[in-house]
Image (tube, rainbow, N blue to C red):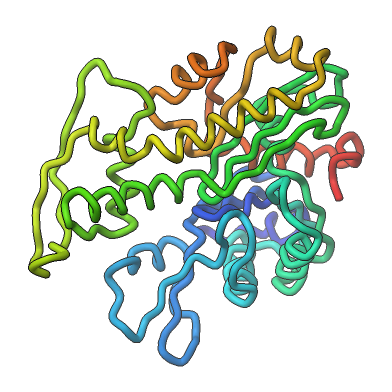
Length: 334
């Protein structure tokens, strides 16, 4: 990245600190960084790679190198690694002592919120504000959260699925479940173990989800070749897999997300429920890209379903809007 003197004097940053990826928005510059939330350590517990470089080591590193995700299920699992990762990302976008707004899952505890805030402060932030992910996602897709109108959002990230009904700058009903993209990857990984005695890596499972994954029957079913290790013989093995099989593997996590959405609707006040009937549900996050998910949700809820124009960036863009206009969004920051 070319050095920018302008960035050195920009002191406001919005961060989508995700389980799978971290996105950094710098005020006046736009999204300056989008990298995997992955850290690699050597045998001396010293960090040797962060982000894209660390992801390349995933599943390929020797025993003395440990490759980890410092965030699990949307919250910090490794405080030190998260702090170092944030320091590196802040340094990459070339800002000094910034004011930072970071999004957090709506179901986090006070201890988990403090961990995020402390990590950002120790990484060099002058001031840290937090915003709930579903609120940020709603703002990011252009919904007016300040009006007395019910807006329902489903944000399917890497570690959590955030479901919320928003009105008058507040979350009226929310549901945060630890079932999202990572859980779908695990479901595929376990399916191969169970059905084919084949061990595959996390990256392979994610690639299969992207290429073959679906929530409904497809007009044209597809297939691909998967490479892994035979759990019985121990030798490398190749197996053909179809989109029907992957749909079967994904059925449990998809059902959990749908049930959480239904539960949220059941707890929604009648006046807001009527708004949702008219306006529908907005879906954001990487999980929104799963083929046929909108149609499946439409069938299960009997409501209009809208996929965000850029679902992967909705949260960071909403956080950025709150950053750009903190006076108007002060009620939703904490």
